Image: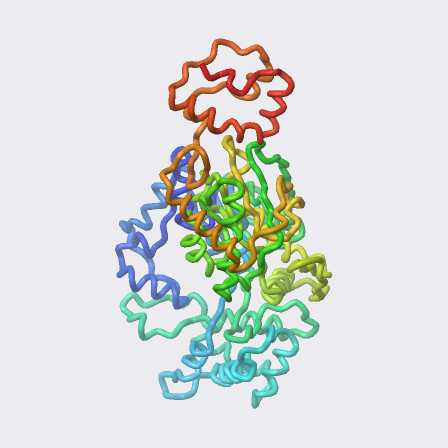
Length: 553
């Protein structure tokens, strides 16, 4: 199987599997060469020198036999997925989009360093004219609004080149700098080696320079050069009769994106609809600032934090953790407490699986230009150009006119919010759980019908807002008790063997009640009001006339 990161392999999957084996990188295991040199050669784009037979890295091929081996997503395309070709089944946890549609970014400084390099004879490198043109175009369009791509980019390069663009590309192809996976000399000092990224940049430029090419790979994004490298999923297995079965576990899978991403493999989407646990309360607050602009102004983020505190005070809860933008993580953790994750780095992360109060702060908006570039790259060889028109649906909510672009927009928008809401495992929750969603988006469309919608919060820096801060901080500082929840105050009911809802529904007449400790009896009495909020318990109470304290001897 493959997963997004080594950390998830070691901490999430390996403990759950029988005879699991986590595949390690050469930089981590190899004893044939200095590990710092291995990391540097890999970062610079060189093929690593071969290992000795007794190297711990090579020994992994023996250790993995007869075991469930956990790789990372990049193994799905490295060497065409050769390492997985003998598997019977390949399970892919989470979407491998970042690995199969790989994005690379290089700065102007990195381009300039290549321009200044000379050959062994002291002559100018054959790639220098094209590199100078790239640097000049980037300099001329620094801090422009939106990216420069497609035909405008091709025209801009041709305008500053003294020779035809196709000639400049052909000359650059003869340069040592354009080599890919060039074998690293085991005795070479990495500090003296040039980075080998030009070949990948040229491949993107060659694609975009073809006549009648509309969906592009390369762009100047106002501060750096960025391009996408599409990879084929398990290319070494395509068309083989003994190819492995491939199962992708992706709760946000979109049919159009999946069919394009996994081509030429046939794709079948299987959807399993599972309702939220009746213990989950969804509270939506659509009236606070909700875009990535909250991280650009500390006052705005402070105002949102105070609104969260006011809602928590009203519900008598404190926050166990949440998800927001990366740059807001520390400030929200300081203000609200708990453990925080960020959009773009939360999928597959189960750090908050036991959280009983989870806050989702702001909608996961992505700049339209970034979404456009990724969609253009995914459908780079589609003869039908992607239309990049947008229409506004509501507050901070936009829809793309092209279905392919809208699929990518959904993946990085509402589906990212869905992933955030599922960090506390609301489907499996057996205890009172509150989801606080501070976004105006239609969360009902992703299965989170609001139980309560907040229509008013204390304004900005008002006296009520300041009082909310003091009250929330005082409650967080109190010794933990059973009168309010938060900070992973879980297992209030499950600490004793109470009958399940199904058992009570099938047998309305209570049997001999279990023996409960005095502490457990107090816990049950104090959380009775929460049980009333859970519809199955409420239904049970009204249909069977069993009082909520019937099992408290």
